[in-house]
Structure formats: structure tokens, C-alpha cells
Length: 488
Image (cartoon, rainbow, N blue to C red; front, top):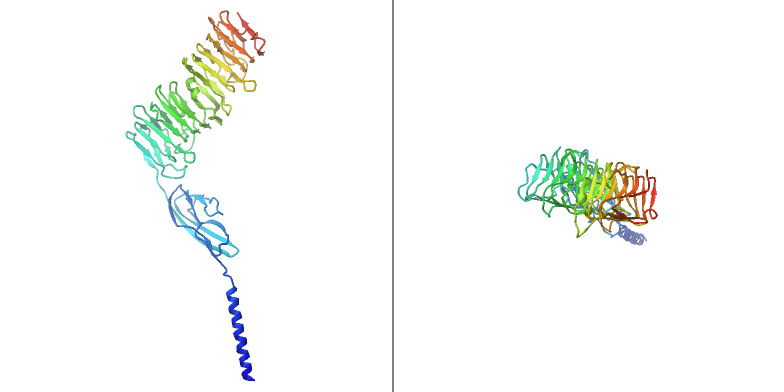
């Protein structure tokens, strides 16, 4: 009996032991995750750091979540992680020192952690302290667009080809300038939308450094995605301050997708006679004066997409006293801007050209300024819904002198336009008027337009000149100090 009991007990114990082993085999591990934060990195201050935790795994191939956080960074650093809950976040290493970032991966099985160390060193800006007499290329040395790659501590003259690569930032000391000279000087500065080239002040305040001057006649001069900021401390030409000035009758430059911002003067000054070879999609903002100042001859080269109305002292395209030279082969076309920027003639424009205004153009004229059509023709034909406007810089009665036409062309036409505020002083023969048609066989046709607020007549036509016979009935005359028409 005792022997039988011992056999039964042994059998029971063996059965229990087998059951225990079976249960152990069914238990799942408590954590199947392995976090991998990537290899340690060494980068330059100002660089964007790319982290990569995509090598992290779950042994059961279950999905998991990412969470990154700084466990250490230099004192004073304001670095923040972007996309901190993804596999590949980024941050900008704003200061030199060590940044330690911890990755946590987690799911229902548990979590795992790993750390990566980023060691950041500071690259001092290279100093440009001599005139450029041989071909030179400036490369991007620091990723951060707020950190200069180069410092200019004195005026630098460029007398050879200077190429500036995308992303380069040049900081200028107080009152310094960059001069691109003729007879060898060339500037090729082609940035990219995401990596613009930046000319800034060492202190990022308006009017800290003088600016850039172009006198080079090379057709290779190109600025694309270039930003000019904080200039205007001293005049670049005569008394004119600007972020950039293109000077001389032989100078030539291409300007595309550039920004002229926060300059204590104009953003850009273009002297009469300059060849503005191309001008596309440029932006002028927060300049003390207007965004741009140029002569009438180069207005035709401005594109409709450029913007001049973002916080400048005067949100206009300013035109200094100048002339449109005779060109019988081509029309000189002034276009309207998409942002509705008006042209402002500061004093007077005299034209011998075949001058055409497209629908939507607005021309403002400074006090006592005037427009003279000597030769060629003046063709300003708007539409009923998109009129051409010619008025004073202040939209008040008798503000500017007016327009006078001596041209004999039958293409002198004003239609679907508004002409107002002329006649502050006599424009010809002691007569005040918005529009005067004067001289031997001068002619003009004016239709479907509003002629208003003259300090004298709406229209004055002398006895030798011709105007359309129905001028009084096909136009609207309002608030002119004298008669709507004086025809000798």
C-alpha cells in the first residue's frame, strides 16, 4: 500500500512539473522594443541637425511611437526639436557645445530608450579685408542664415569675377560698402529659394552699412535670390541712400527673385542710362524711402510680379526727372503691377518715344511736376473696368502742372482714363489745364475719360492743334476751376 502511494505521488509530481513547464513556455516577454537614436554627430554652430531613429525595432514587428527630448544642451541655447514625435526630427544647433537627445520608443509591449550626442563647434566668419583682384568664389560655410560666413570690415572693391554660392551670408561693418567696378569687376550671386544669399549688417538695424554699388558693364552681372538688408548709412550716389545702386551709362545687371528690405533709404537705385537687363519677381519692403528709384527709360523693364507695397516709406515706384528717348522701332510699354503699385513721377518726364500705358497703370506726379509728349506718341487706352489713372501724388485739386502734347501722331489717344489734379501753375501760354494740346499740327483724341479737378481748364487746345470733335460729349468733366474745354 505504501509503495502504491509513493508511485501515485511521483506520478502527480511529474504531471505538475510538466504543467509548470508548459505555462513558462506560454509567457510573452515584457519588452520587445529596441530604441536606436543613431550615430553621434559633429556639426558646426548654426547647422540644422537631422536625427534618425528609423533603425529602432520591435521584435514582433508591431508598430510603435517615437518621442525625442533634449537631455542636455549648452547654457543659453534656445534650440527646439521639430517633429519630435517622428522618426526623423530636426533642430538648429544655435550654440557651440554638446547636445544630448534621448529617444523613447513605446507601444503596448513596453518602451526602450537610447541617446545620441551632437557635438557642435563654432566656425568663426572669414574676414574679407582686401580688394578682389583675381577670380574668387565664396562658399557657404555655415548652414544657419542668421550666422555670417564672411565679415567685411572695410570697403571692398571688386575688380575681377566674384562668384557667391547659395546660402552665403556676408555681414558688413558700419559704413562699409561693396563696389563692383567696371573694367574687370563682375558679380555672379545666384542663390536658391531655400538658400538665399544675404548681404546684412553686422548689426541687424536699418542704415548700419552703406550698401552695394554696381558700375560694371558685364552682361554676366547677376543677382538671383539675393537679400540686401540694413544698408543706407551713407549715400551711394550724390545724396541718395539705398541698399544697392547701379551707376553709370554702361552698367548692366540682372536682378531676379531678390529682396531689398530694411534699408535706410531706397531699396534699389537705378541711374539713367543703366541697362537693367532683366528684372523679375523682386520684393521691396520696409525701406525708409520708396522701394525703388529709377529713370523713365528703365520703367519698361519692370515686371508685373515684383512687389513695392510692403511697408516702405512710400509704396510707389519713384521716377526721377528723366526722358524717354526716341525709338521709332519699338513701343515703350509701361505695365500695371499685380499689387497695384503706382508709378510716381517726382518732377517731370519728357518723351520722344512711342509710349504706351497698359490698362491698370496709375501714374502720380509730384507737385509742379509735368509730362511732356514732344515726339513719337502717347497711347493710354484702358478698359471700362480697368482704367488708366493720371493724377497728383496727393489726390487733390490743382496739385501738379499737367500734361502737354506737341506730338503730331494720330496714335496720341487717351481712352477709359481718369486725368485729375493738374493746373497748379500755367502749363503753356499762360493757361492752366490738366491736358494741353499745343503747337503746329499737334493732335490728340480723348474719349470715354474723366477729366477733373484742374486748377484751370480740363483741356486746352491752341488754334494750330487738333482734338476729336466730340471731345466735350464723349468725356466727363468734373470740378475744373475754369471751363471744361478751351479751344482757341
